[in-house]
Length: 156
Image (cartoon, rainbow, N blue to C red; front, side, top):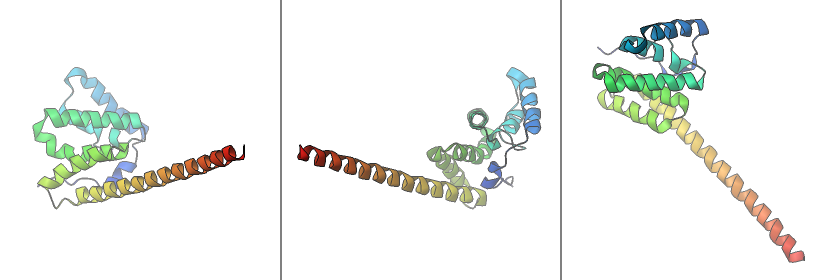
């Protein structure tokens, strides 16, 4: 039976500084020989780096999870969701979708991954609409400025 994954909304609850300090201390204590479980805990478990409000810590969490994904085949399935979630928080929506889709390929009924897919799709759609609005605003402004310049040059 697969472990229950946290909801995507859980990633928005940052870890308390003292709790993160405990995870960081364990990670640093193990040094060069840091274990996969310690790395995973620090990256996510018990609300580690991915849940942080610091972008640098979120990036470090994604880096650690990527390392686990590459080097510990037995933990790949577990890492997929957290990599998707971490990339979502960082605004890397294509990467978030890629990892999430890999998980959904293996577990089509995974409700947390389905929920995350919806969040990613909504964010991409929202940012796409904002991009269109910005480009439209720039085009209108350029048209107005161009019109004023053209009108000013005709008066002379």
